[in-house]
Image 1 (cartoon, rainbow, N blue to C red):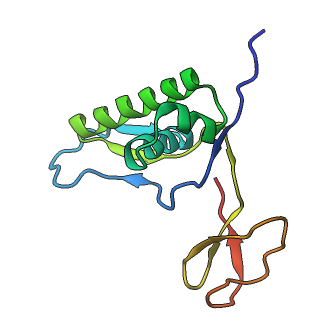
Image 2: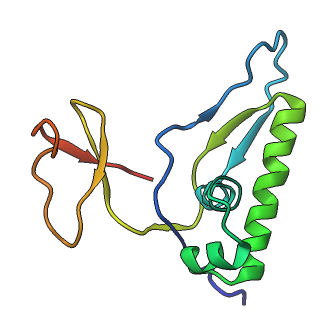
Length: 133
């Protein structure tokens, strides 16, 4: 029997759902689905310039597992760029490091330290909704 897949810790889900190619006259309907852990791995290595070992510690996975996640993300992004495919970011086996909220009025994202209950937005003081993955 196979072992259950461990959840990967991500700091924050993206606040967008993906990307569409610009200037394509005839779309072939191709789509690449990037998981949240692949997005996090790509962000940590290529945007924040972390080493695989540093990023693996942050995501609470082994370095070889991180490398597999990162390699999959790069292959999917390369395919999307070469084939002018739509990129959709969703799903995966993830656990959020902190609880993030989005204000329904001013659209800012924020988090609360600890286990404090959220009653209103810290900027405009209106009701907030929890960000869902």
